[in-house]
Image 1: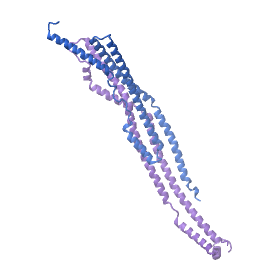
Image 2: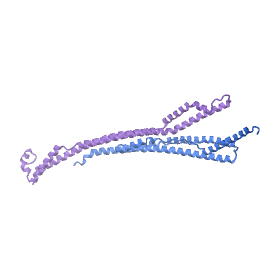
Image 3: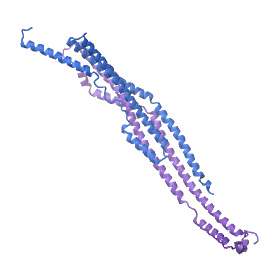
Image 4: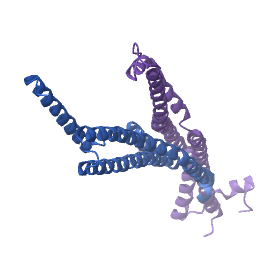
Length: 196
Length: 210
């Protein structure tokens, strides 16, 4: 006899659910749009990171090239096979450095994108869960708070480091050899001032 | 065997009980509906908070962080300008004009390079700081949503509690049970209540002549 007695509550519940679903749809679209517009920001970030890192590699290449030129000249090896070998090593290390810098730039971009994606999913979770269940909202909240520390994009993780490690050893050896030669020469002069 | 008084009493008892139960269900229904509406209002507040965060996110850019970072870098460079100048080659007594020009050029080059690197670093660091700021906002939103969910849950509990407090009117139920009991008893014992109370009931004008 009282089968129709729940009409008002069920109507209210249905209206609330319809409204909730519509709100979820609107929020989801808005979240996707907000994160979809981040391409330019990400592009600027990766370009800056790339320029910063490759700039460092280029600077190191200039210094290493200069040291190589003077080292070879000091040893009298300019134009010889040693010069060719050293030039090749220098060029290889330069390209390695460039690749490493690009890899780091791409890694930074991937981290930034992952951070944005994590944020998007967290927001979607909040928008979709809403007040459906207190426990679900609590879980979403705790997940976000625990991820807060890791939410930052890693950006620049260290610098490019010493790209020209191998050739640096060669320069050092050449400089040491040159110093030894100079020392021997000066010792000879000291031992026999009339020898020259 | 037809006993209109017994049948009437039974019908009255059943009707009274049904009406009583229906009214209770309606009151409970109203309480639950009011609770759902209140939860809907809280849901709207929560959705507004989420939308405000989405709006803030849509407008978010790293410009403020970039400006802050570059200001910090430039302050540091300025604070150490004298040492930078000295490192790039200071004044040498008796040196040629060409040397002075070269030193000046080197110093300018160092400053320009440092400025360029500072600008690049600020562009690299700013997105990370922007995302930290956004994560803090998101954490606040999550906390707010949890608060809304708690309020909604409490509202649901209160609505159910209030609904459960609405019960059938016991006097009507007892009266209906008594009436039904008398009618059933009369039928079971084979006594015709119409014959017993016919005159009195006829005087009330409910039924026709006994």
